Length: 369
Image (tube, rainbow, N blue to C red; front, side, top):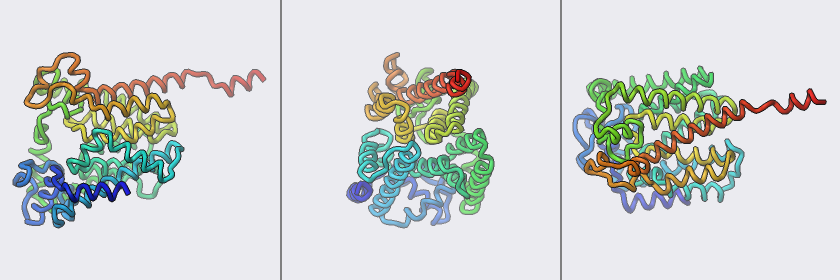
């Protein structure tokens, strides 16, 4: 019902900005052109994903705009439903239809989710692929979905690192191999475009938009707003790498302890912190993280969710470079997603330290007996 309703809304209002760009990339390949040779004529925006992603968008490119919007929105909401179902099962909660429907409807109130749908973004689909792969690593072809997700958008390569850290080397190998196959497909369908992307385009951090914009909730975005200019590479790497590395280690520890959903969610947050540009609609990972937190404390889960419903990142003045004049309180609110993620990683690390420091009561009881 929710999927059908969302598709109907998209049919009636098909002006999904990023979907226009995706379709333009697919249409360029059909015309024998590079997806980077010209900006989308509707929005004036460039195609910024690997050539393989453009090839995946060809089915949407051949559909009329209304049909493409309806189909893509239905796929995205279906992906959200899949994430909710997998997450509920993973933490042992009720998966009856009304529960799933209620949570999916509630998830639509989160700013990253409704922004993702209003832009026609790909993030919900990629998140579903990763969540399925990382919570079900015993499947015969586990890792392939992560590799495909990375082929469409490079940032899911972070999950290959997570697979290695948790000892799932076969799945990590399949993910890496699948990713390399997507690179090869990109060169096959658009040799010139692939060369352009993997050289000049890949190194241009500004190609997807101004990094100082409030919607960029990444470590790079925070540093840009604090310094009023793009940070030197050494400063960015020197401050971001330790945080991301620590987050991945904490994520791997939770995953190995049996909480695969929380471990995967923490790795998703590490991915968002590491990327130079993580627009607010990339933070759809707030949904599975909220479900993962529920068994650890309902207040914690509610507080986490409230951040993404209230969207404090847009409380301070933003746009037209006004972020570069923020005061202290503006930075606290305007970097809320990043601060919430860092705070959650610290909580997860502290919880691990506390539990590892507790005496083994079963052994103590045995000795007393």
